[in-house]
Length: 444
Image 1 (cartoon, rainbow, N blue to C red):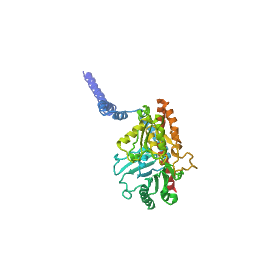
Image 2 (image 1 turned 45 degrees about the vertical axis):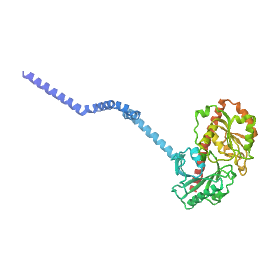
Image 3 (image 1 turned 90 degrees about the vertical axis):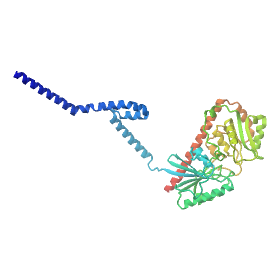
Image 4 (image 1 turned 90 degrees about the horizontal axis):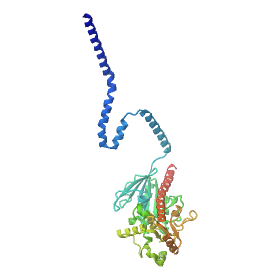
């Protein structure tokens, strides 16, 4: 009996010890294993509806929080790649700094530069606003653009070192206005409020731009670089460069986006001509030739005897429709060979037929460019039809009648692609010229 009791007590004590050890094990070790599992399961169960509510963005975040057995190796690789990328970036940008240029648009060609070539935006969008501005970055050059009637000398803050002034020097009244701006800007340079000044000039159609000579740096002035419209004999690609006339932004000609129908639709007219017919000009010859063989019935022609500076909404729409619905756009020389019509036709994929003759006053620098007039366009291989005499037109129109639509579509594509490349190339050239000149002078 005693033996039985002793065995029972020993068994109970052993059982108690085993239970104590079991409890201690769970307290000190079991919790470490079990805690993550319920927590992870709880996360997943609770996360499912949250993902459905919050969408894909949070799915990737939650997945990234799940355990990844290769996480350490991946982090090391990412850190190494980041380190290598930073080394390459630092090496490529070593010695380079951001370059800031402000453009003061005081002529309508400024809008062609900003909206068509730089593809920049302006705020506000209202074209009648007193003050409009925009920003654009080309490479490491930061451009800001200001324009409008409220941009007046001395009435706005100048907090930049480099300025491009866009001016109109086409006629006497415009020259007087432009001179006031140049005197103001030159004073800023002389008082060290500006470091560098360049000008984009809508020149005189006879290339009579002598008035600005005194402001060029080579003549003791402050204008380091001059970009001038028309085939001026001054162009040397050192401090004087040619700039395109562009579209008639002063008549609200828009930035045109190419469309499927612009490329692929059959166009009902062989050609178009909208413009002023001056007495005893080649335009009169053109009109007479169009009347021959009934070609004027195949082309959309709207001639006027007197030049009109402004368009009505109706006349602008008719003109744009003519460009869009004609395979060719006739571009006779006016006072100058270069005209807005050339660039406006390019905008709509209508091939310009250009009268390739030099007008009086503009001779071009034939020692540098053998292909004046229109040396800028020709140097960039413009896919136009160039003619010396409008008597060549009937043969061109006869050939046009035989061209199938598929060939015309490919021709339109080539023209639109060229025109986009032309504008992009101008933007890059312009920027490179500024950087090379301004930054070199800073070092000097």
